[in-house]
Image: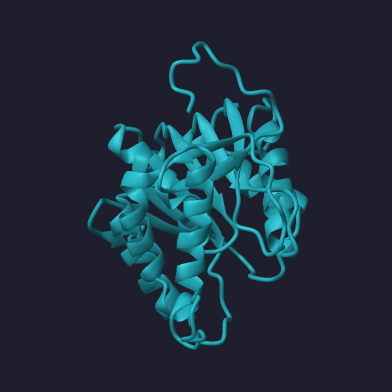
Length: 253
């Protein structure tokens, strides 16, 4: 069942909203299999997009529960807090079942209808190779839904719309040596990205080993590694199945 939220930089409200009210034009839509994946994979990019004046939304496919130290209520409160830190314009939970995400026709239709409603220019989905089946299925759903979103003469709600591009962020459960298409400098955004991640205490603090390096220390080290590859303090890697066009070499590092 679709759970809708209206998001402001400070408040996440669970309030019935008409479909007409929710129709908008987002610059960026991040699709996350679970609450916290968007923050982990590209929290810095989200903050950077917002600083640049872009509108950004997150579609969480599941509530992420059950987990050892979480609950649906706890996870919802943590998501609300992280949403406030990121300053998102919109966030919604599709209500799929955690651990059981599959690229079904119904899931494809649901996500395509979201694309037609929020009409994002760019979609960000998880990197397509992962040990977590939910992450792999999420990207399969997103890619198929992008195609379906543009179809006319269908039973889907909303007007046809084709998002310009899908990019892929890394939030993987594999010990893999990533080969990204590009790395984004998030040096100025790192502290706030960490604050957003720390909102998920039930996932990354409670019950985690206290010995160094902790999970959060490992995240910092990973961001520092990607920063080093482009000559900055911190970075986030991204990929794309399609060629990335450029009009200038001026912003390359």
